[in-house]
Image (cartoon, rainbow, N blue to C red; front, side, top):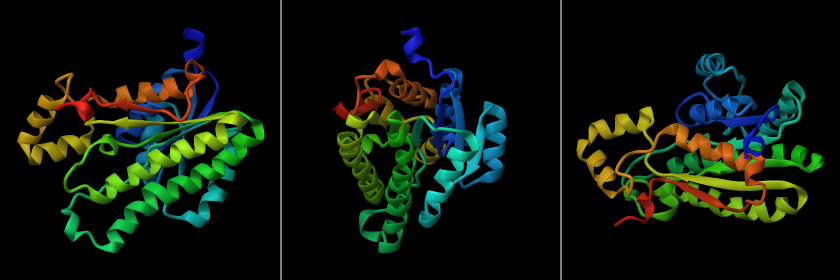
Length: 250
């Protein structure tokens, strides 16, 4: 197992890798020996995170859809053959369902779904040429439960969850495994800030969670490292819940 869990020398891209779950995932991949490239729109934050992690970085804006083929080609040329991709980048907007404008809904889908799938398609072209690779989508526990004030975000994550399995059906026979991770409430800075505004929410989540606590970002990162590694060589089209049991708890 020690050998199989190693990612030694494998080049892996983590989108949204400058903070939160993406940063923690990049850290775990580096610890497993991977050559990690973190990608995000925020260049200064990227530079800082890359220096801390010992990773490479590249600016990537998933809303610039026409530029994504060039970005994928540049990554392959600059860093070498990319083995793995963690699709973590995404945005959220919490409002009552009836007040979302069509433009706000499109904004979430443009980033979380269309941009993510376009970039995945472009990177997969190179993986398919080599006949090897592993792709991981970060979805959400909202795929498995209703959550108020979260309508379009939930829709985007459900879209990724379903299309992950469709991509797996197409790519797996050609050597590319495709899986996803559905995190529950993970204690990132954004979640802490959100819960500080509604103190009773944290207590509610902790009561509902079978493990009695919020998850840590590195726990999602370790799951991603496993799915990318040869230890998961017979796993594809699977969504792994990293949620402490919260999505099936009463």
